[in-house]
Image 1 (cartoon, rainbow, N blue to C red):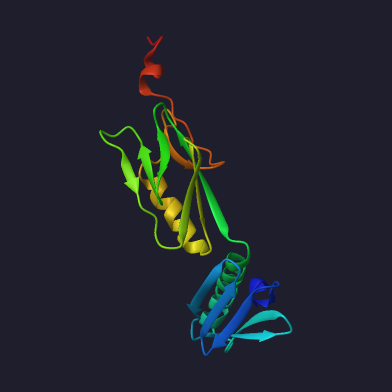
Image 2: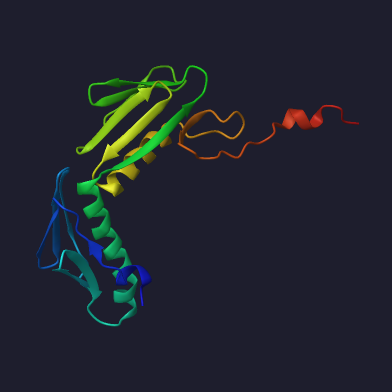
Length: 183
């Protein structure tokens, strides 16, 4: 039995959940999201809650039960509150600036990079060393943040690059430091 799948998803005020076969559509104050559920699970709306149940007791149904419940819960949370990921830019001369909807990044390359976000994603630059990725689709927010981080991931020697806020980068000692004072 899935501990996650058993929990009903409460529907907050201002959010509407519609079911049409396996398709779940969630509408709220921030927008609308829709998703097709797997054939091994079903969803029901009752008493201001969404309940996800497996169709049978097969291994596949039980494995997809908790996943499907979490996906629907993320849709409900996204249209009511939204999601955000914060990125930090570390390095001398590394900076970001907003250019319309895109963000222009100076990351030590010969010319600046311009990152254009996908539809439904908003980028904010509160300071030259910080980027905030916002949106209603948790998967898309995480994917966008990962794509921006991939432009210059943090390197282990000086720690320069783009990292998630609060991410710890394991630092390495350079080889030359070990040879000093040797035999």
